[in-house]
Each structure stands twice: as C-alpha cells, then as structure tokens.
Length: 102
Image (cartoon, rainbow, N blue to C red; front, side):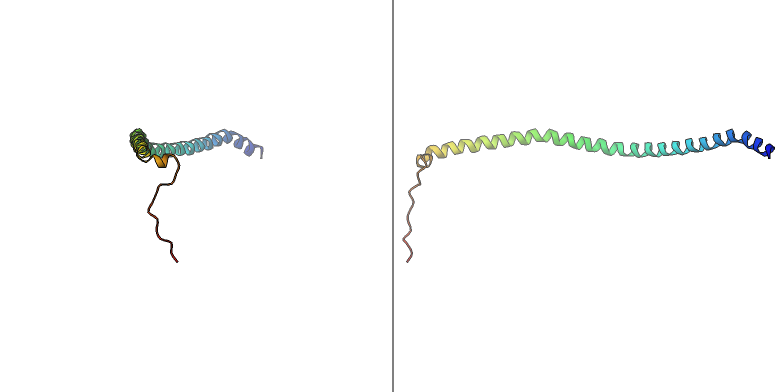
C-alpha cells in the first residue's frame, strides 16, 4: 500500500500539470472566441459611430433652418400686429354679426 501511495505522490504533479494545461487551454479557447466576437462587432460599431456622427452633423443644419423659420414667423407676426392695431390693443375685431336665430 505504501508503494501505491508513493506512486500516486509521484503522479500528482503530472496530474496537476495536465489539468492546469486543460484549464489554460479552455481559457485560451474562451478568450479566442471572445476576441472573434469583438473583432466581428468592431466594424458594426464603427459603422454605427459614423451614422451617429452624420446625424450630429445634420442637427446644426436643422437647427439653423428652424431658427430661420422662427425669424420669418416673428417678422410676419410683427407685420400682422402693426397692420391690425386693434388686435394688439386686446380689443375684439369688429365682425359682421349674424342675425339671432329664433
């Protein structure tokens, strides 16, 4: 029995090395798979980044268009207020009255 125990003690470092190499191989395979996934997703992320930058470049143009429309509407509003001073005084405009219904 002592001889068998001595042999087991001799094999233990080899078993430890074997299982350690299995664990390391599994970790390497997992890391390689993760690397492949990240490499595949990198072009997708780059493309979406370009789309976001393009949208970001368009937003100031849209903002300028909206500002110009606001300026035009404000100017036309001022023209209307100047044309109809009754409205600017807060008085109701005279309108044609309908005859009262019986």
